[in-house]
Length: 162
Image (cartoon, rainbow, N blue to C red; front, top):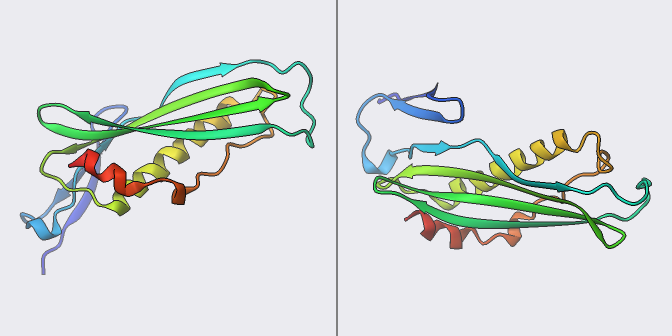
């Protein structure tokens, strides 16, 4: 029986590497090494609304996602960019964008479950940053729209990582 130990090691402030220790892995049980960056807030355009937002006021919230392929000579990767707009009385009061990247060795293969996990993880970090930054704004009692994973074509993302 072969035993493998997954050990996390922080190599820099923003990247955590998972290192598999044990016997040499065969292709059938190889676990890809995925490097993840910290979510970067690439846009936070907040405009104070003309009047206070009451709890029963309607505030529109739109959520979108872009997926971009990333490559260099030794690694492949993908970046997820989430964007949300909050609109109150036909005025955009917040345009917030955040981006997260995942980098993988060329020989590693990533499946649909792993891509879904990346998507959920990025969305979670995106909402976490929002929840912290919304304090002190008119949106302090509002949340970002829930991610509808069934609306995301994960199968279309996998070719970006081949």
